[in-house]
Image (cartoon, rainbow, N blue to C red):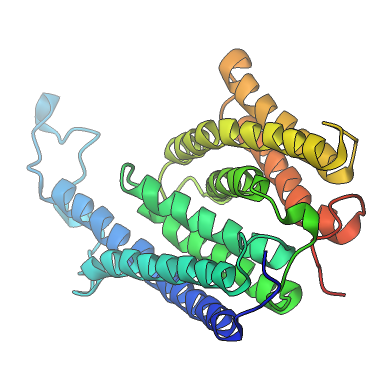
Length: 322
């Protein structure tokens, strides 16, 4: 690996990160408008349809108990004309932010001629990219656009945290990270983390959702999306843990050494395994299962960020600025 750093590409990478944050923030605003007005418009149309439905006479000539007269229906306010465009614009901005995020990762790697996740700053940038990727590609198959506002704001905040508190200048890494195992182990951990973050967003929405809310999907839909994301992410995280053990044997001559990062990676694996096991065998669903998966998410975030900041060990080469 060359120790030379392409300052131009490194600067471009930093600028692309700032552009990514702005695009994610604009996308979040568009998603929020879509959630507030377009879903409200859909609910209003259903109300109008019910209000316009003919009232059939019941037994004895009276109106049936489950049918309200049209004059009792609440007044419906027409939705703004632009409301129909808020969702597509939000998705478009998300894809633009995704491209800028990817370009920032690629230019960072090209600037230093190595895999671009050799420190905490680079890892958090890649993790935010993975979270948005998981949302966008799941959206191609499932109707989960409602998650957009929450995934983009979480990614924007994550990138802002990385730029403000974790940023280090592009440069070479320690020899232990100059290996193809970074592409195998760390990439798998990043992809799984993205899926788990999407599931965590669903879990948080599940707990804060009000029963009377018409602007969010049902709790059943939120739980279903979270479960699918974890089912996809869990085997990838399992592979990342196994690959980490193989890398440890190559680098340090042992598969497991009770290093803090290894311990918390295993704790995270246990927590998500407990969630899947509880759903499959004990029939845990609803609030109990959601709390378990959010505990697992907390373990994941502490493993990815907290261990490097607060604990030492063989993984302390993550270059967290002092």
